[in-house]
Image 1 (cartoon, rainbow, N blue to C red):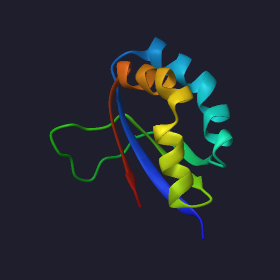
Image 2 (image 1 turned 45 degrees about the vertical axis):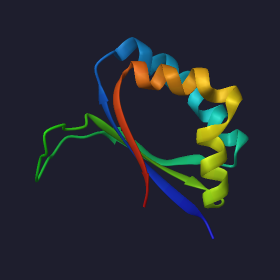
Image 3 (image 1 turned 135 degrees about the horizontal axis):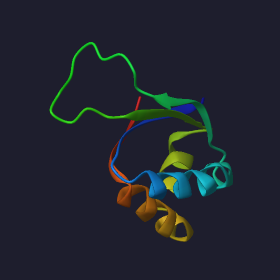
Image 4 (image 1 turned 90 degrees about the vertical axis):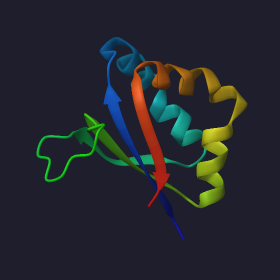
Length: 93
């Protein structure tokens, strides 16, 4: 059964997130992952203290593959680049 994660990102550094996106597709594919949907957030119905500016819904073959993507030592520089672009919250859905 497939496993989905949701990434909510508050972009504060557009150059860093653009560079991250260049490598993100291959990094996800390495673990069987793919972006199902990603876009800037336009309409907000309720807002907490940290409104994300974009989201990505990502699918992996299973939860273990998602965890392997996140914990892959070869991808830590890429994850650090995403973190340097602003704030991100990534969780299972």
